[in-house]
Image (cartoon, rainbow, N blue to C red; front, side, top):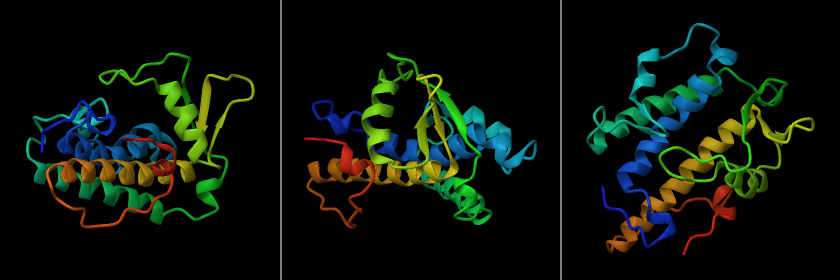
Length: 190
């Protein structure tokens, strides 16, 4: 579960890291980025949860075993369903949006990934709607709720795909087919 394959572009994170990242996605996007807009001061999860994040993953001391991560994932996905259940097709596309400043050369702490390159070469190519660069300030990216839900789904597909590639290297065949959409149409792995 913790093996990496650094010789492969998809293998830099272990299966455990992949699951940890996906488990934290709804919390980070819906509570931290969207929290004030969606919930005001009444977050549906305790803010102490934020202390469990280490960048884009759950801190290992809180979830040392894969089953603990799966339990966290169930709750974070339940949060996503709670939010989605309160929205409509129209409301996820309304004027509400969040903003992220992404200057040239912005590096993701802990991974060294170029955030701007990801936004330009993956995000903007995969999403036809819901994300845009500010016409007044090219460093600002805006995201609506439609983008956010699509992003979380496509991230989950991409990380599930890399988990399958790890398992295939161990001689295990995938048990499910992942829809080839979103980021899987843009990302290139060997």
